[in-house]
Structures are given as C-alpha cells and as structure tokens.
Amino acid sequence: MKALFIGGTGTISSAITKQLAEQGHELYLLNRGNRQSTLPDNVINIQADINDESKVAGLISELSFDVVADFIAFEPSQLERDYRLFKDKTKQFIFISSASAYQKPLSDYRITEGTPLANPYWQYSRNKIACEEYLMKQYREQGFPVTIVRPSHTYDERSIPLGVHGRNGSWQVAKRMLENKPVIIHGDGTSLWTMTHNSDFAQGFIGLMGNLHAIGEAVQITSDESLTWNQIYECIASALGVKLNAVHVSSSFLATCSEMDYTGGLIGDKANSVVFDNSKLKRLVPGFTATTRFDQGIKATIRYILDHPELQREDAEFDAWCDKVARAMDGAIAAVKGS
Image (tube, rainbow, N blue to C red; front, top):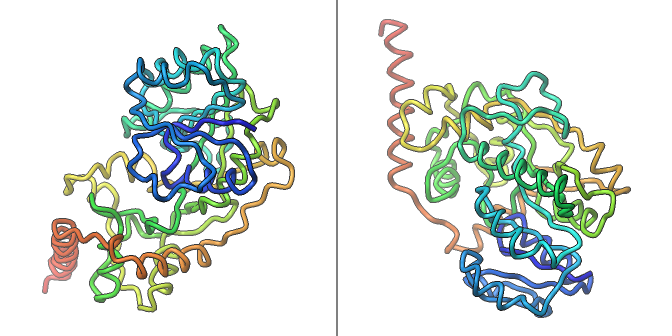
C-alpha cells in the first residue's frame, strides 16, 4: 500500500506511521520536518508546509497514492485545499475528525456513529463537524473517496492524559501528585470516560486504509474500556507510586474561573459520560480489539516521561491557579460550616 500522511508525527499518527513502516508499506509524510529524527528509516519525508499549496502541488505532481490521510486539518478551508490537491491523486482520503463533535449534552451515553453531531460549547468541535459536512458533500456530489475517523482521548508515551491541565501539558499535574499537593478532578469524578492507547488506535486505523467498505463512512476508533475519572487519576498516582490527594470541583466553576477553555474541553467534552460502541469498526476490521488497559498503558507512559526530563515541562502559572482553586474550595467548606 502506498500512502501519504499530512502530519504523521503526532500522538495519533506516530503509532500508525511506526506500524505501517514495520509492515513494509510505502509511506510518505508531508510535514515541516520538525520531528524528522523520530521517523523510521524507510519512511519518505516530503518537507513542506501543507498551507503552501502551490509548493506542495509541485512536490506531488508525479505521485499518486492508495491512501491520503490528513491528521492536522481543523477547518473546512483546509479540507478545500486538500480536495484541490488530492482529488485526482488518491483512492481514499481519510480525515481525522473528533468524538468531541458528538451531541452535547448527550441524549444517550452510548455513542455510535449515528449519534447526532452538535456541540454548542466548543468551536473546535463545530469546526470538525463543518469539515465532515464539506467532505461528505464532495463524496455525494463528486465521488471523492472519503473516510471519516473519529478518535476520542488517545494517548502515547509522551504525555499523561488528563481532564484538567495547563497550557504546557500534563506534567505539572504529575508533579503535584509527587509533591502530595491537591490535584483537581472535574465534577465528582464519577462520570465515565474512555482512554485509548495510540498503538491500539493504529491497528483500527490501518484496517480502514484501503478498505472499500470504509468509503463514504464515518468510523469511531476507541478502546472498549470505560473508567471513571477517579479511577483514571488513581491509576496515574499509582503509576507514580504516590497517594492521590484529590479535590473535586464542578466543571462549570472551573470554566468560570480559568483563562483556559474549560467550557469547551470539559462541558463540551470530558465532563460528559461516554461509552463508545465500536461495533461498526469491528465489522469493517474483523478481529480488531483494543488490548492496552489504561492501568497498563499509563505505567509505560509514566516510565517514559520520568526517563526523559525534556518532557517534564513545568507550568508555574497553572500550578499557582490549582493552589488558588484548592484554597477556595477549603474556604467555601469553612464558610458553610461557619468555622
């Protein structure tokens, strides 16, 4: 199989790149080359900014592909560009959308590809919905061979997946755990969530590549494991070898008192209980099963991050904000109790 990935080195795409390279497929990556040192030796890098459409058109003028996948498109105008570039150059175009595009609030916690798409809380999700609508229009009217993939919360060895974190990533929360500082969990921590390891996601994704039955379809790829946020944070603390000091704070309070977009990221996504039904994926990719339990996957992630200090990016602003929120919660309790 001959494939082109736009991006190819991110959390989701890096595992797919690795597995395809190991399987001996002919894989091209089109990106700016910022992480070229991490690529497998047999991957062909086309170094360019995808937004430089004329340059990219020249670089691929003599190429055609079985599959083109865009991992870094977030707005319809970017898909319009992709359509112009690849409409006559690929047998399948895969767009990576987002499970956050599903209806919020949910009318049913069980999510299938038939769950309505609507998110009034998060512009990111509405943009993904608009991207899907554009591509399906091209499929219906022009025969553009589209497959839409909807991942949920996918993680790898380079970042700890969390509900509440700062702009510099998740390390500061792990550091707070190590220092026995209060760690914020949104809501009461009992809503259900799904974490998917990128190696499992990659298997499902590769099964959709070149798959005739996936053309014109939207498919979600997630683990079947459901965890509460309390369990997720307990697994992270356990992997760090510490006891969790949790402070539960309502998502609406966090959204109101933070400059971070917790309205979108929490109320429009992670504060909702979700259970994904992957029956469609399993019909299209017989034998697919996500095999990495979160308590196992997060141990490997923690080990990797502790062994790589460059990934331990501190966030003093977020740390101070967490302290303020924790003190505010203690103060509210004291005020109500009258002490």
